[in-house]
Length: 88
Image 1 (cartoon, rainbow, N blue to C red):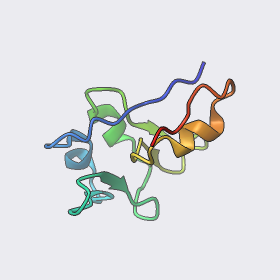
Image 2: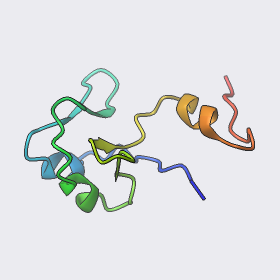
Image 3: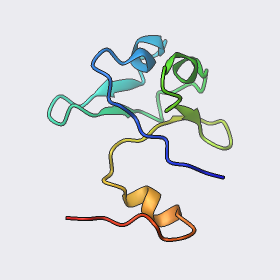
Image 4: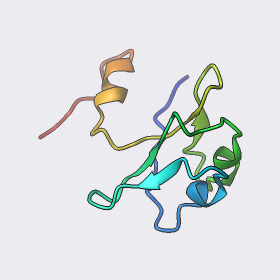
């Protein structure tokens, strides 16, 4: 069963600290950590470093993935029971 993996947006971001190519950076305006998929080498060190299990690899192993706080828009589209709704 697929479950949402919520990123806690850590202040110290162990995932970013573990990334050897600095592919995980914080948006200074929103405070949200983002992954640059073009820079990511899919080494998996960020996945190992996340203390919450919120990092994982893209299904084909091309890059790392995590929740980037899209307000549930992605999770909403893949939820098989339509249980996730966006509330304004």
